[in-house]
Image (cartoon, rainbow, N blue to C red; front, side, top):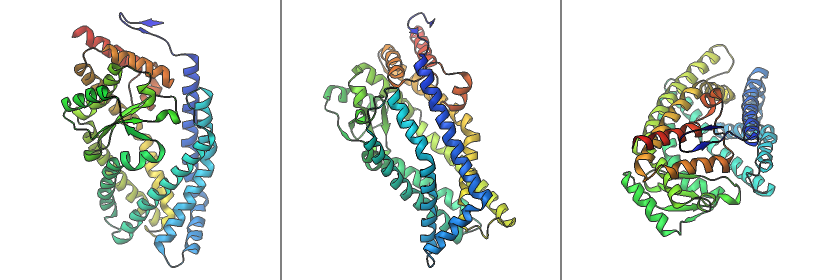
Length: 378
């Protein structure tokens, strides 16, 4: 057992280690399955078969043929991926982290498939329309369009997407609501409401977030958080979230993603052009090359993941420091971090390579140590 002068830092339980190790392996398996499917589609020519079937189903409409191709691709991916998703569902139950019934989970999976199909169809239709209309500059135009879609989705998600899966209602704790609104005003942001998030209908984990942009910006607090944490602890959790606003992390992240996305579209255009020149596809607008586009995005995301996670951990440390400055004492932050780790079965001390490669947040022990160091200096 390692300790600091003020707060004991307990080692992770064997249960936490097992849960997170299994969860990581399920993630690896999911990535390998998706990667393998893309490679198989391209290497075997099955993507051309799907293209042929789509054209047979819509002989007079290129756009509808694209939709049919996307539909078949998503159905194949869903059928292959469902066993792993079910294993993840069972894992949460095995470690007493979920109370969602199988029927509810299946309904959520169906809704996710429909929403995913709708969004994928819109994106792919736009993509290939741009390729057909402007084969030389499609990637620049697509980059600008996709940035606009990303910002729009961030605005609409709290009021359109989230309620499809969870229930929300205005927070009825007026004193806590007042404290959180005052805290947000001190941070220079105006929230459009504080909402109770009925997370307990599906999960025993706790969470809170500052979601949305502009007119849809709101605070959401899981009922599992409201039921088990003091007002001071909830205020500390939200102060951290507001730290992201104060340091303009959302805007900075949009710029970072904009740069990565621009490079990604340029790379996709280069790879597609190379493939067409080698007669792998009839033309850039041959939508059977979609798995190649997805593969380029997947590989780029994987290669950049350590750097993006390091950047995210830097942002999280900044948000933590803002929290320390904004609350009367760091003790509620420390207690909330420890309680969240226990309730969510998070690893407080992940191995160095796991944190470096996979974690977007610093280890709990490091965050607690930083809070205690702050308290000693102030």
